[in-house]
Length: 540
Image (cartoon, rainbow, N blue to C red; front, side):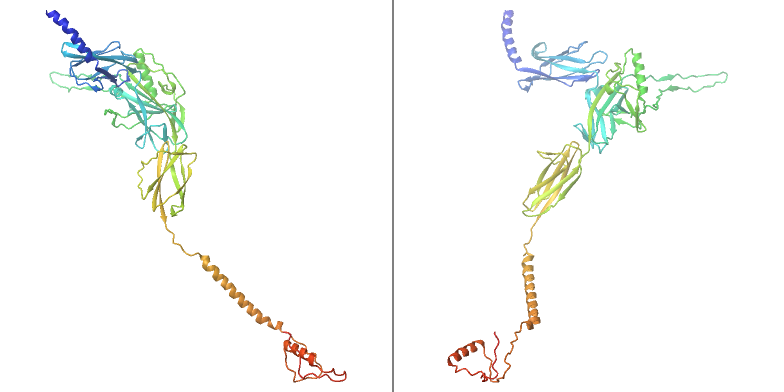
């Protein structure tokens, strides 16, 4: 009877479990890639629909496809599980691996059924994972352009998992190269350099070497005691402790090294390490080869372009080869050492500078604003203009939605404005800088005054007229005697005192009267009778 009941109930339970399982799904996240020898973290999260499940009776079953294989099983817990796995450098090669997880829901401790499963791919790399950062004026440069006016800090930023791995190394050294020229070693993964020539392109390379070779053991000489009889002489124990001796090798005339004063340097993970000392790369290269031979590992540093170094301001050949650097393609495979190679290409540019604004920023209402802007800087300069009413305080964070590109930093601003006062923001930028230049514009009123010609012209012409009149009168007075008409007296006979002066009209009238009243003409022997004193008057 019991068997039949179980057989009857099982299909119902299976049906309900199938329905419940369809609502679950699991997602895997990981912090890969990791370097060989590092620890990777897998996180599985169970969802019911689109929300994280609140079920607390879940079990997680993990495994990967690595050889040797890793696996893990958890007790009942909530919907999230973390699995950390270390892949030893001497057991696991670089490559792509698979991790699987199966999630089961448990009704009781021993009764569980699968509700979800997932798989994910992850990568294990031969070299350290990270990137090279360039910092200028406390700002990280995202683009491949740097300014020639300030020092550049080169810094290697490793993934947290890789840094957690190499921080336990005996030594961590970073070799720095610019255009296949060796510039020295640092132990804090930082390097300072000034690029002073705009328009040049440079190839930056950094080689990080983490050496896990344990330091040589410390040798201690046991104390010796000597006793002499009958006089007992006790010699104090002498303990001699031999410490490892560090030898600093100076490079020859064809090599150079960088010496940093010993001071504690704190790395990103907060671990204090000794600052870099003067170590010639040739010494380190010989040590690498020696250790590799002892480990029966084949080491070949393939030469790419000739590596140079700077001696007394001049570049000379440097007879040391490095893995990866300058097309060095083969790396030492000693499991005691881990390498990281980082490359970046940059272009040096001059920032925008010497912005000069000319023009009249005091304008009359109704006039057109005309400004000319000139500046200096490397190419790919662009600008925009913003108009602010009243007084504006520049913050340096101003920007525009659209910029206008320029072939040369010389442009005009022409605009009609109305108001009492404006602040014009001229924003000029290129790949390495941005300048915000404010220009205050003030408007003024002009009082209308009569034109000067209205007064000057009438006064001038009046003076000219007076001068002409005075000159004419003087000229007339001076020359009037020339215009007096003298009448000739042709009466050479008797003079008649009774002749009176008559005008032309009177004489004409008398002549007409005499013509009709004249008597007989006198003879030629008679003296003509004319009134004495009569004479012709003036014709005028």
